[in-house]
Image 1 (cartoon, rainbow, N blue to C red):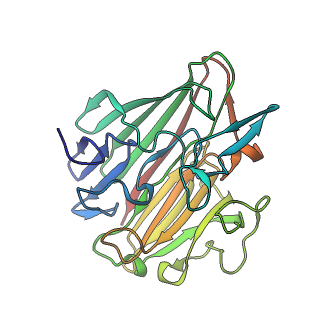
Image 2: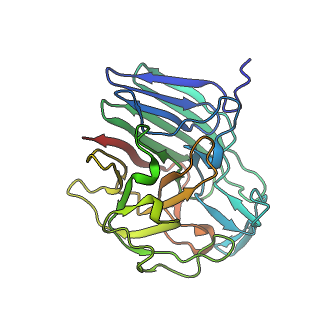
Image 3: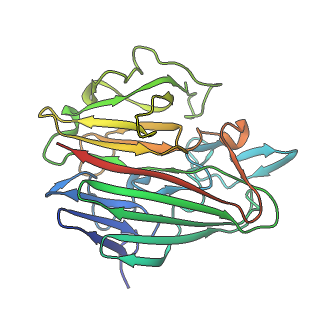
Length: 302
């Protein structure tokens, strides 16, 4: 039996790339292209630090006080962020996923969100990781297998790096016109507001010059319909998180508490912002039997 607190690691390979996907939280634990890590590694005996790479379902980010109300009913979730008094990062962060399909370069994992205190709904979830020569494509499917409408939002928490460049020397760029101011508990204060000087990432900013735990929206989409958060090295190489049509929010989080890293950065694709179970903002209601697919990925470019 493995002593690894992230459970069994599923290794994917192509000619140029390798990735590791964990059993616990279905997290993207490692991604390497041509010998360069695009996801920072952490010790084998540690759980995923700061939600590194995990799937966030049926909500990303936080629910204030774990308490929420929709359609005339109030619910109380377990408090999983005691320091700030919130329910944080969904219900599958520390749950094991089972393998339902596997190839050398791709894997599909599944886990159910069973009815429980504060979330009396039943979702069957699947996530497919498909490795490419330049990154990894990720597809999530949520299916309501319960008898009533079920609210849902989804996110992921990938950290990015270029392992041969100090993260502090990378620049970050995100074509977003608005962000959500937060209170002292990392919860939104009202709706999004236009970016100000300290939060504007529409032009590249050196990561060593910013400190962010910020959800961005009103993000310009490329010709392919995707939103992007881009990290760029001084030599022009870049790594990015992209989000498909269902992704309208990108959370940028910088920290000096990631093991083995002086500075780490996560760019989190999300279908809804923090506390969406209360605000209702972009909260998806799935009818019985209805499925919903969300896509995102990581890619590297020279």
